[in-house]
Length: 467
View 1 (tube, one colour):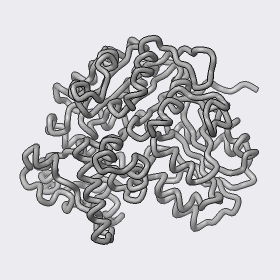
View 2 (cartoon, helix red, strand yellow):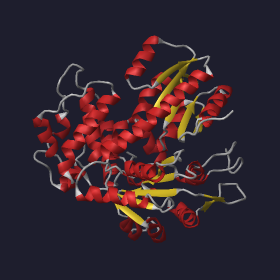
View 3 (cartoon, one colour):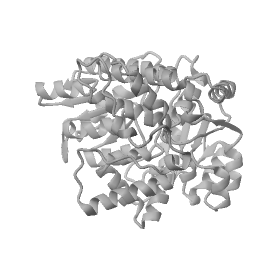
View 4 (cartoon, helix red, strand yellow):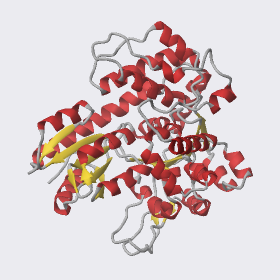
């Protein structure tokens, strides 16, 4: 049976029925997808800690909970993913609530393969439209710095194996720039090669090599099956290593060898394999400073810096703020399927006077919060001025960087919890969102800090996540 040429995409399947999963994975593969399988919610939570997926297929009844309960967390952690829910016991009220909150499709068992394939193809169409909309709506502006960055991306797109280093503060759009470079490089292809992102700060050091290079069955304790590494998944396309300064020191030499030779060997494998795609790295910290402080290899820095593209901070192109605000608000209104409200002149003036230490991501989060608290029938956006309170006419840079956002008003914490929350918040911001460094500063393990971030997801706003 032949299948049409399709773009590749990443897919997470969360279901405990192995036979059913095999059928889903087969259809996903036929449609050009690379599927990852989790049998329960605990495994799914661990998987989305360090990577996102284009598509998520979520069963409702699972051994440790329901997909319905997990959906808000999944939607918050992977806001750009297309999510399909599958259930053997359909509930109309549940389907309505999930759809209102962005669920793409609600399917019932027994599942018809033809219907599932049709839904999968609609999801892929949504993904392609979303990619185009993101590129058009967020990497925009007329400032010289932003135009220079876009020009550099267009130039290096002609050389599909040349490594690229993206520099910029948290929230400036480094992942978006990497995705744009990917589309500029391969946009004319009949089949768009895979784009695989990895946030280096979110992978435990002991799992970093297996995650990146893959492993064979029996390569280490607990390796009961072959693991496809992210390099293999990105073959022929783009591997995006976000927060490259968080790469464990012990693994930097192996990463350097891979970049120099374009060859790698999965754990437990005998033969080397070749990688024919591009590696894009990103950092919000100075690599030179990291090298001087002994946290990053100088030879790796030089190897990554063949082409360097700097993404400007939002405050460096303030003339683009109004246009960015309009585009983001339109995009968010479409996401929540509602009419775009107007932004009052006084609110725009407040935005222009704010420093935006979190850059475009912070602007988007602010607009999304404001939109969600705005009544459907309101003509104007109920702007969340409380977030900007105290910013006045624009704080000095040092003040802005050290300003901590308030706790959400609905959060009720004990005195001890509040102290812990603030300490984590301060450490994350002081370390530029670096999870490992913040954990070391706090005197707790990497995994312990990840559990706190699961408990308090709003702390992720200061993390260097992909945008």
